[in-house]
Image 1 (cartoon, one colour):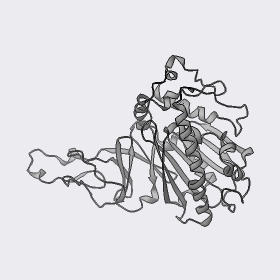
Image 2 (cartoon, helix red, strand yellow):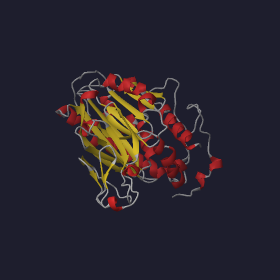
Image 3 (cartoon, rainbow, N blue to C red):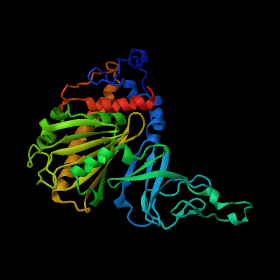
Image 4 (spheres, one colour):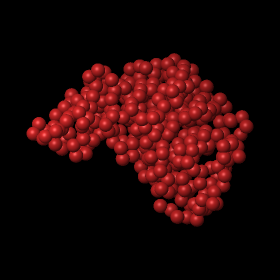
Length: 376
């Protein structure tokens, strides 16, 4: 943890509501352990968290797991066909119940073999019949809110949070506009990246294309940058090019699919980005999971129509994995190193009046949500 002088709060330059007048967040927001810990409670424990896709939960008893910081959860399809989410912890002595993904007719704790039905109720506790006053109803699993959004499964630890479908109604409309086949998509692949960068650096990077011409020559050959626009809307933002620069480009070649566009991307608070590439129907999510102050684990899950990966989609997936991601990871790791420098603390947003492809207003929008959530 750095204690450089440029992190002294009274020296901060103003972060204001108007992005054209605002300075960026001070470097300490990306470096200090106290801020990292505050983010877990104020942001991640109160927001909708992506954890998988309905195509991974097709049969009764199918389950997946996810971690929100120290909170381990599992989502399971119960006997009525509904999705249920629970804290992944036995109510006897706290052992975790399941790992990874799979299928269970009954949830059995590996430690003392307490067993639970798929609705979370305690089914059996060995020798409990000989314990006076033991009541199985008192030891059901603790449930968590779960919601399906465009085929993606989300959970929320906050019982008072507004439904995601209400918070991001316009986002669902846009996803269906650029990917009308969203309801027939299925999970096909997860790519994992370990990045030496704070999670917010990764989000900042996604939210602007000011860096695209210098850093992503293949991407700007794919996308018509003149039509690329970022639009902020509540808890999400859109990053869309309505035209492709060329169907035969340096990134990958494609034939126009069900919708003719160049690229559609979205950011969803707090740590999820969604991507739709042109050509055959597809949608992917890139989730930035904090791994300490200076680390992020990125998960990119790919969903394609009927689970069939065409050659065109394979080329797009390979481009993302082998070219675009390494380019962005290199940029973000360099920024993280730079944030530790005694020669840097804050910068100034580049925001133009027309909000062109070079404008960083969406980065300001995200940082403003961070500031608001932390009460800074």
